[in-house]
Length: 100
Image (cartoon, rainbow, N blue to C red; front, side, top):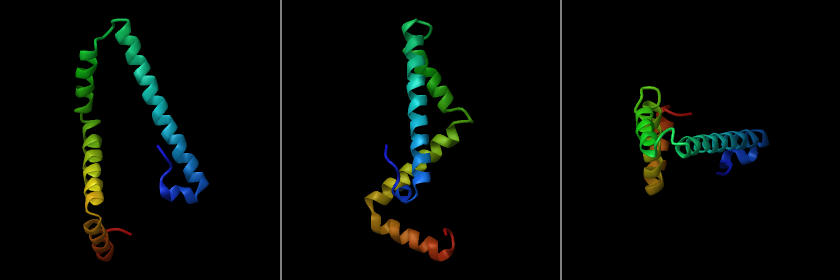
């Protein structure tokens, strides 16, 4: 992970972004560590972990967020694949007042 281009010009924002990235990585490490302990101690199986992971992903609390991320990823991939169309869309949205 790196600092986004916009934040190179603002050290406070860059430091905040790096802190957030570090927090995300630390949480991922902690979760993986806990899952390994539970599986190694045979408290839960890998299959059960996968089953519960899917249940949580599909819960009303997380499903909308996951779908929004996927939607945004698809949109940015489309923009990357066709930058001219993306710029046209941005310009049109700007002219219509849809974005500032």
